Amino acid sequence: MENNRVMKQKYKKNIATAALIFFVGIVCITIFQNNKKRQATQSLFAMDTYMEITAYGKNSEVAVAAAAAELQRLDALLSTGSNTSEVTRINQQKTANLSDDTAYLLERSQQIYQDTQGAFDITIYPIMKLWGFAGDTFHVPTQKELDAVLPGVDMSVLCYQKENKTLTIPEASAMDFGGIAKGYASDRAAEIIKNYGIESAIMNLGGNVRAIGTKTDGSLWRVGIRTPDGSQPYLGTISVKDKAVITSGGYERYFEENGIVYHHIIDPKTGKPAQNGLVSVTIVCEDGTTADGLSTALYVMGTEKALTFWQQYNQVFDAVLLDEEGNLYVTEGLQEVFSSERDYKIYRREK
Ligand code: ADP
Ligand code: MG
Image 1 (cartoon, protein in one colour):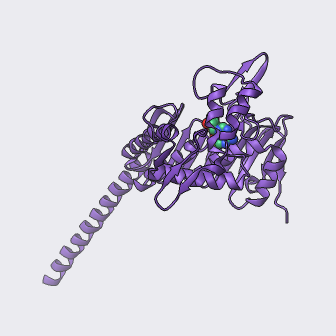
Image 2: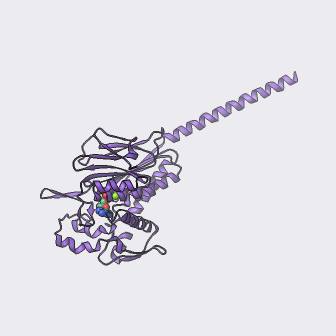
Image 3: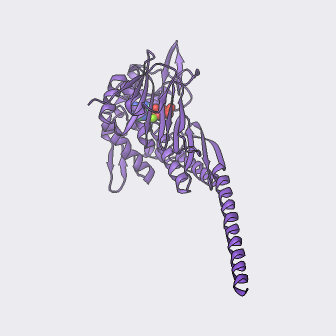
């Protein structure tokens, strides 16, 4: 009898414990699901462009706010248009101790300059000013005007001491990180978002897209590449996870004079808008800084050199190139993830 009662009590206790575990489980799953569904979006204007960050999951609000603050901080540091930025101070004083961000960007820019044989060159700023891309008043410079500033456009003459991060630039030179800053900013912002434990986020910094993880359902992010004239449908879409998808196009910033279009991606050798056959270059890479630098550089190189360059670095990045004739080239690494309503050529690795 006694034994039976003890057993019954034990039985009840077990049922109660099981019910409690079940209940706590349901609560946990509900919180988890709700956290997963949680979404925070922030829009801002920085680096001369409209930006948007969206993150999902627990802490998404704080993560997005911290990422936006980082983008504003980098804008204030790197902007050529601000009198108080570090870049403006260097350009005026010609010598400076660099902050960690600027030192990193300078070192990465030097590497890209070398790898691309000068197609990417941050000392382009005097040329940007001459054309009016750095201000509001556009102007088509004469050859004489170009010749007067071109000697200053040469990254190889910057004097940088890595050990103590000091930089001295020639009197005629001035720097502009515009070709790489947004890619770097997207890397920094992504790092911050990930540090909040976020596994799913997407940001668009004026056409510079950065995917963090996958969508909340585990599927890949689909990034559309716009057509140069803005017409629909997209040039194509690329499905990615943890990647930067960055596009450079002459259509991003330009002006027209006497029926001729002048855009903001400059060939450092001539000081004129690059006209080497490409109208849009998209780079897909894990590192946004690389993607941004290369999108500008490959645009300057033109189709043939850009594709040869890819053969050399096909482990690092992939690309989608659109030329003036409307030919669309997609490098082999994107074969499975690129889709388009247009015809396109898959450009393969040389064996
Ligand atoms: P966007 O800024 O429209 O995304 P890019 O990444 O191609 O496009 O950057 C263009 C900017 O890069 C220009 O506004 C200028 O600041 C800078 N730039 C232009 N030509 C070059 C070049 N050959 N090398 C490095 N930077 C460049
Ligand atoms: Mg770029």
